[in-house]
Length: 214
Image (tube, rainbow, N blue to C red):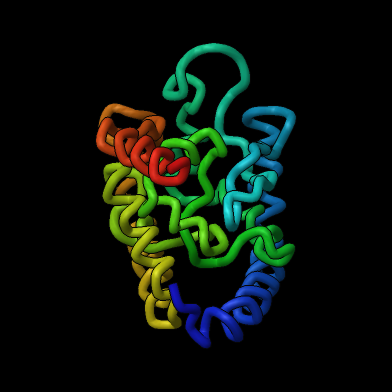
């Protein structure tokens, strides 16, 4: 896929400028959320998990913790406080620092667990060509209410042609989804179900392996 001038020269400086400004402006909110997590859930305040970055390179994703520790399913551990954090996306604010570090972008596909990567088909793997983002085309299209196949297709389409208009549309769409409270979770789940490969995707990967070996 061809890289646009915006993607090559403007996107990263814009990320740095906006992320730095947001961290400065939102620093009181960050401190308030950190204190609220400490009081409601105790330590640790931050949730850390290895996720897939650009080209699948692993990095440590940071979020404010929204679930209580211990056993039980996600819905039981989430609680009212955690649901508010996730609905408002306040739990994602620490990732602004990761935008400054170059691990993420303001706009891009959401970073997924490394365990999902083997289940991607060829088209879905193309989403890894760009930095993961705080907001993105899939979030603007419905967030967690969007089925996996549609969500990953949105990401692949975005990665094909990264442009200023696309980033602007994704940012506004994500903000709109958050304001109306849509897509906080998939039906019947606390957030999203795990992603597993469909039979057709498995068949495609087997065909790819046979073609490579031949």
